[in-house]
Length: 223
Image: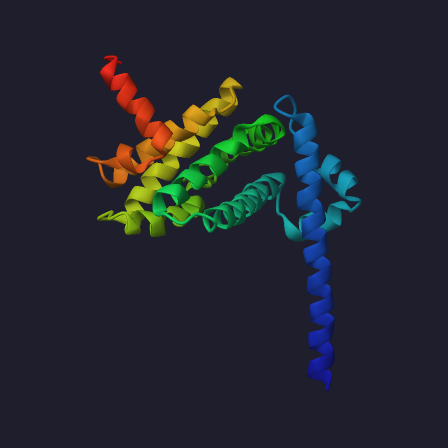
């Protein structure tokens, strides 16, 4: 009986703590979005926005940097879930790769761009206190490309997926800092690159027909 009561108490406490963490993450995202790349928020700003105390903050995070790292990880998980859902809608591995690229680069469009840029700007300082540098979403998102790459005949799907993820997220990052919006043509070209990594000889013919047609037209025109 005592054990069951204790377990119920612990379960309630864990649920309460999970709620606190969620409020802190959501509040931090709101404050970071508002500040943009002009001013980094203080712990006081975040706890005020969350309606919590400093004690609640430090119960879950040893520092503001730890919260920013958790925020980046949380955003990566949300994007991972979104991409997985979108990729499931496609019948072919080529189309799934295209969906993945489109979903990643969509983080550089309008409101998403401002939020992503602000989070990455705040995460950039994390490299000062770590050996491996700031946390990167590449590894987590690359996992989604392993099945379609394997289906396309990659000799090392995990390696190819990681390579492509770094390249695509690098393209997104460049777009964010330049404040340019990824276009449909950017998505098509990035998808074509991804497929060439898997099969250098015939990747263009497996991409969208419009993409392949544009490629053939450029070749005829000597571009």
